[in-house]
Amino acid sequence: MQGMDHSQMQGMGSMQGMDHSQMQGMGSMQGMDHSQMQGTGSMQGMDHGDMQMQGGSAPADARDPHGYSGGYQLGVGQYAIGPHRSLHMADEHLFASVLVDRLEWVKGNESNAAAYEAQAWIGSSFNRLVIKAEGESERRKIHEARTELLWGHAIATYWDTQLGIRNDAGYGRPTRNWLAFGIQGLAPYWFEVDATGYIGTEGRTALRLSAEYELLITQRLILQPRIEANLYGKNDPEVGVGSGLSSGAVGLRLRYEFSRQFAPYIGIERYQTFGNTADMVRTAGGRSGETRFVAGVRMWF
Image (tube, rainbow, N blue to C red; front, top):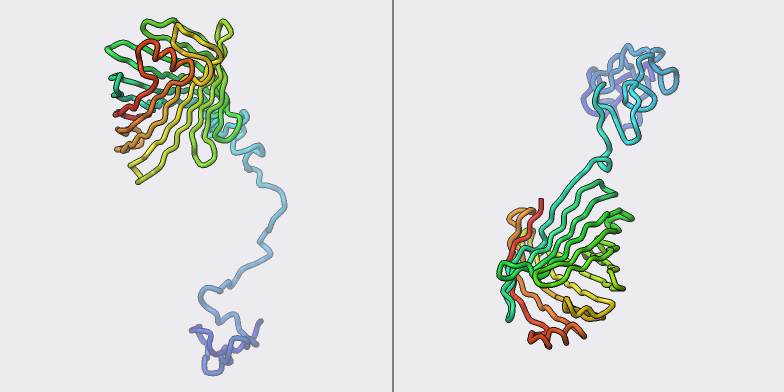
């Protein structure tokens, strides 16, 4: 497009040496003299012969072809940050967490106790050592306690299988040991689900199911519905449980998160025994069920 006379162009904005009086539209660009153009498009003196596009040999000082390692051999999932240090992918590191889901005072018609439920784990994204603990204390004595030591393995997004042992103990009651196997995770619509089966000595079997959901009223005020059920395969009068559906609880807890790690709450819960377990409780002079008021704190770190 050499030789263009800018005096013939109109309507294209201010360019040095251009006569806008002769320019009409944007299509007339005949006889343009590139030596007169200034501004963004100026590329005078460029020798395109010196330019090399894609292809050709790599420079002699190119980096190692196996990654940005500077010539150091790295294992799978590692990358170098210097000649003497390397980092691993996140799933190769160890992490740990402790969640105290319930640490509360419980007030009912026949109960005035403290209760707790906590879970701690340490491990990677795929394999973890998990400890679960739940119990109830009254008059400075732990009357009922469940402790589980589990190995957790991720099998899908949000889901872990768990395998390990469970120990039941408490003041004035015999100890029971179980083999535990189950699954824990986040179901569709954000329901937190925990289902664990147990095999004990003398042919005992059990199943524990629990689910909870967090409803955000605001970013800090959260309502948590929760349901729990316990089933046993045979009667065990020494610990006061019967076969079939033994006990269950349905509750609502309203908490306020001063931070994500610390949240006091209040709530209400209905505890009920069923079947043979309810018969045992009534025979001992107790009630088969009661409504409880709770107040406590939820925290994690």
